Length: 468
Image (tube, rainbow, N blue to C red; front, side, top):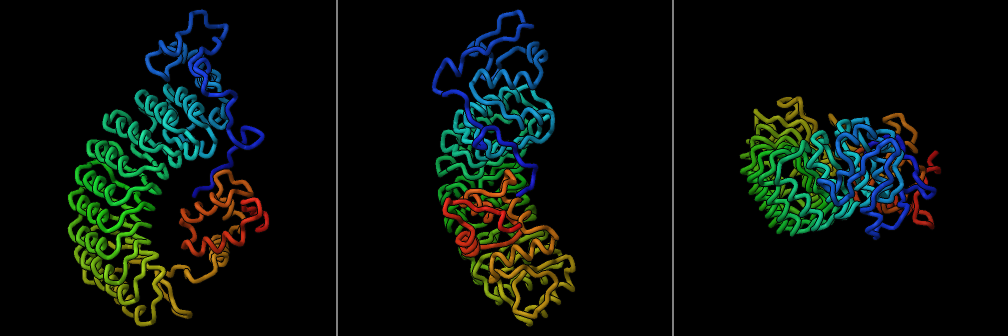
């Protein structure tokens, strides 16, 4: 999670609110009052070429970007976002958690039609709904400068997935990074994305984490991977893939020739899924990063992955954190890397596996063959290694304090970094999600739950002032 400058409150309650109800057709489609300097009659909203074009090119140049946006806000009946106005000539626009709603999103989309500065736009958690997606898609038909778009956690559902999929099939924008995490996408949405991304070659980085895809969705997405020739990074973590979905995804991966980074953590691959992934690693010559943390893979599954690592020549990072792998399984993994003289492995994360001095001696032999390798593991007290992970048996506050001490930052700064607004308090549910998603201090769900019990107040909030 980043630590951008705090977002300013736009209303007394800290959210972007709307001035008027959005159900009135007169409010949504009525004309804004034209400035006195413009004499010609303004076309009505319905007469515009698209829903987002409220003025012709000449008028846009006259009014400028700021005036265009203010007029759009007046037209759709929402409060202008000062952060957007201040930064509309900068390449990065971050408007996460601003409560924009569909109409606030529409006003921003209107202004972006002719904007040539912004290349990265973040609209996470804004209740943009299907109407907001439609506005953004229409804007992207005209704007060829925007390259990265984050519309995660907006409850887009099936209708939102349909609009996005229809747009992606056209390959008409400059968009290469798309984040759609946490949008209640299910199997039907996976079918739509399969159709779109099988033909799309522009999207390079796609985030579909924290959705509700299960095994049938895995089949659709596996077919997509077999056909797609654009994706280089795909995040499918925190979905509901089990054995059937895992096998289908891996089947698609065997035919894929472009994907480099794949995050499948927090699913349910099990040992049969690990067997399929091991076969992918044996044959694939493109993947460099694979994360299957938290997939119920035991030492039996680790042995199947090891068979692939013996032959793989491209993989650099393999994350197996939070899998029930014993030290015997860990030994199989590191020995498979040692047996492969062409291995490019740089990081093996088995940081919840407790090892002994015997493992350390074997690992020294592996390091001698592959000095670029780091293995992250847990240790018994007094055991040293090349690079050790923080123990998952430690108390969560001790883990966080250790991170703060190591980076020489106040403890409160770590907690504030979890809050998009950098404020001193946040709702417990948002704090819990932020802790699980951050990658600075590795914690499992039990540790996060333990921390919640200590920090939650009677109002369902977490206040960071106690850490000052």
